[in-house]
Each structure stands twice: as structure tokens, then as C-alpha cells.
Amino acid sequence: MGLAVRGHRESAESLHRGNFLQVIELLRQSDEFLDTQLASRPGSAHYLSQTSQNHLTNAIVCEVLDVIGNSVREADFFSVVTDETTDLVHDAHLEQFAVVVRYCIVTKTLPPLSDSYP
Image (cartoon, rainbow, N blue to C red):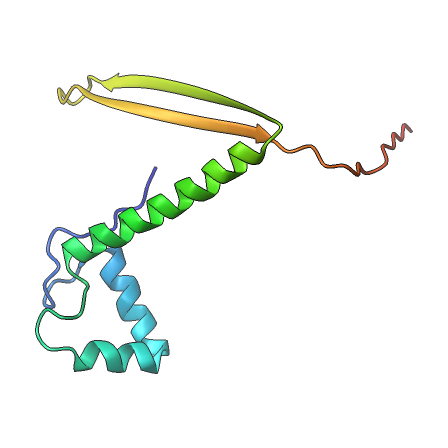
């Protein structure tokens, strides 16, 4: 289950602005540079809008997928497992799709095996 990034109402008056903006506010309390930068920006030039949040999220996704892809390409063995289900409970008929990638990198030096039995 994922953590929602955005809230329903992200205005400054809202009590529940979403996790992304709440984390930014928390960071501002302990990071003077961040606080100064955000306070000095005019109007909407703070780059915290929904569009900017989407761009940041997409950049993180691309980076994570690149790291995983590079690891799988370097792996000696790998497998891909997929699963799909349709949500019929809420009459939404939304498909949920999961992908699991497993990979194994064989190292040249293996730790010694030891068995101990009482």
C-alpha cells in the first residue's frame, strides 16, 4: 500500500495539505537555507505545485527503474513474475497489475558454509 503524496486541498489554510507539503514544512523548521529559499520566492515560483510534485515523482520513478534495470542486466540470473486482478468490489472495474523482478548476482568469493547441529 502506498502513501498518498498530495492532499485534497493544498492551500495554506488547509489542515491536511498532503504528505509532500507537510514534509516540506517539517524540513523548513530544521533547514534554514530551505526556509529562506521558499520564503523569498515570489508567488508560485516555489516549485511545490501539483505539476512540480508529479515531475519530481516521475524523476524518482525513472531513477529507481534505471537502478533496478542496471542491476538486472548485470545479474547472472533473473526472473519476472506478474499478477493482475480486477477490483470488482467498488464497481470501479479497475485492474491492478503487479510486477516482481528477482535477480541473483553470483559473487566470486563465497563465505564458508558451516552447519552446526546440537
